[in-house]
Image (cartoon, rainbow, N blue to C red; front, side):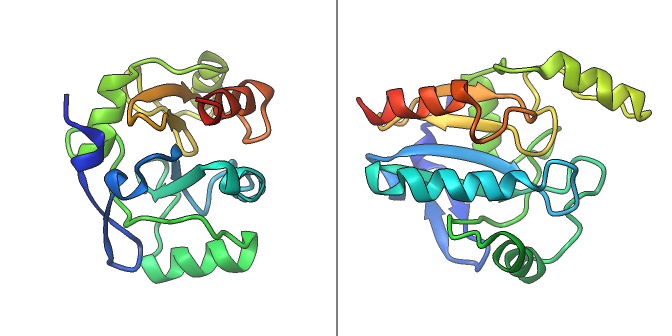
Amino acid sequence: MADLASIPLTRIDGTPDSLGEHAGKVLLVVNVASKCGLTPQYEGLETLYGEYRDKGLEILGFPANDFGAQEPGTHEEIAQFCSANYGVSFPLFAKADVTGAGKQPLYAALTEAQPTKQGPAEEFRERLKGYGMTPTQDPEVLWNFEKFLVGRDGKVAGRFAPGVEPKDPALVAAIEAELAK
């Protein structure tokens, strides 16, 4: 498996980055979208970031257009939307695939490290089927706003289904446990 810290990334403004640049922090890596039923999770993510940033939490948002074409915008449009509608101050990265054959190397490594997710994934899959969609199967990312928790040691410590809200007690407990290490 690839070392997560060494995978090259690009910020939404074109600046080079990597998880190594965030070494020593607890990371919540989230694939995001602007036109999704779960888009209001941006507000919860920003609240979580505000509450735990000074304790060592970094939230990293990865826009992806993989699911229902729910992130069609340009990098500039995405950044503007997030800032204007949700006051997002956590880092956003360049739009890229998070599932399928063309998924970005970070997501290939994350799903390999943690192939299953916590939370109501099966219920979410059934809802998608009800809308006439064909959901992905593990280890693939199921939908927008799936969350990977990476510990200070750079290892994947947890993975949470898209429907797990940022304030969900299980997610908050997992973040707090990693921050305490």
